[in-house]
Length: 278
Length: 319
Image 1: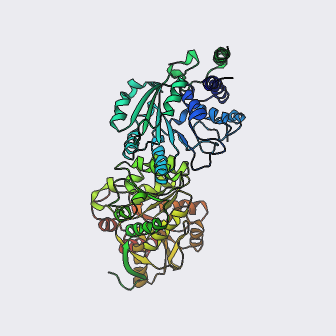
Image 2: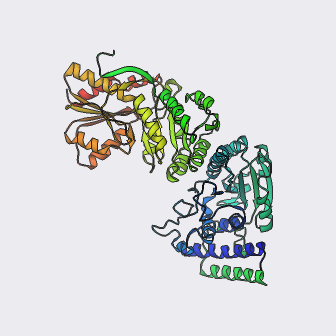
Image 3: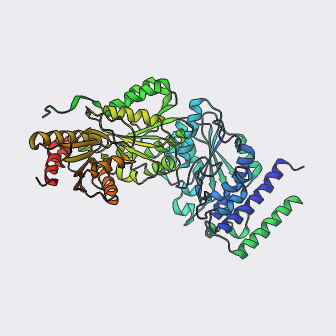
């Protein structure tokens, strides 16, 4: 009998396999960022969030809103695994007339909001969390932001309002992989220190290793970190995580592996899975 | 100036009607929520806030967050009215309108207050002469400029029930009540006056000067002029346009908006593509730095008055 963590670990590798499979098939995708955030999504959907295909229409469900919409492959793979739609649908990813476009869209079962423009998810989440407070509902709102999207001013407008309205039912997670399309995030536009900034805005902040499933699990279990305050998880991640030649390499922001590269990645992930079974 | 024309007494500003109607709706529906960006005073929403403190959300001067938060609220079933000066709402928060409201199909009612040149001498930063143009190009948004108190009240009531995003814009000066047998319905122009010689198709606060112009033309030139309140810019009432143009009447459009991309061009596009070629003129604010003045002075400067519109009519008719 596998422990919960062993199950999650296997899922993380399988999700990585699928992310690459469907990106290669689509000849498009945000590879590096999908691999950096997949462990977070794994823990959210398999442990934290109270939502499923059966409860998705319930007003009491937990919400997940992906602000960094471009890493949609990670989301689609997890939603398929949760049973929101058949995984084979992802063979149409980015194809002519497919609903499975390169960003989250509500035409796909399980997606809460259409995102893709950066700096939108946090405001949407604030509105959704406010509604829960108004209606005295117990659901929580989790949102995933990229570190590269934080210079968008709307994030900071939203951050102010989340603290102002004491939204302790809101948890934002920053996928801090420290790379964005044109370079390192600290070179393009430095946003550090994020913890001090958000704390100054009235948030309660935790740092985690964004690939440590146990840590992610325990951290999300503690939300809200403080009553009356919104929670921020700064997840320290590696862009391209899990495929050695992609890790921390800028070109895999939206690079698509060729056949040989893909074979190498498949082999590496197969070994990772075998190691987990040993 | 006001002679015997077919209007009732001058009533309230559409803004006041908006505020009163919202209070009536909120009294029996706790899902009515107003979101403001430090605009509860200018939106005449102070009484609303006092009566329904649990149904008003203040985001401060942050229009992007205003629209994003409104969209999040609407996604849970709230009937949301996001209220901000039209100039800021439709420019600064345009991406939120496009993505979070229209594209995501979150049925927010976007309320652009002090629209057009209502802010007068405060200048172009505070004018919204671009809103019809930009919002017309966004799918899944109804774009409306009510002319009088009746249209405003109906628009608010119908918008609250509609599960589709709506943009409503109006000004803050008292508006006379217009007489028409056509009930208000989104996408259906209201015929305010019927004639056979020419049609003036106007929207928002220019409908009244259009009506005054029609009365003046009849008095002074025995012309029978149709006047339409085309309150809904999108979807446009193309069947009414078809009917009017089908009779061969020349058409003048009037709007408190740039001549580029608004009601006039929407009508022209439809008519030209449907082989309805009639003498046609677009009246609005020209493509230039807008003259300084009150709303009335700006209207007068650009001919959006009974006199200006009747002169344009005579010119179009070669009289």
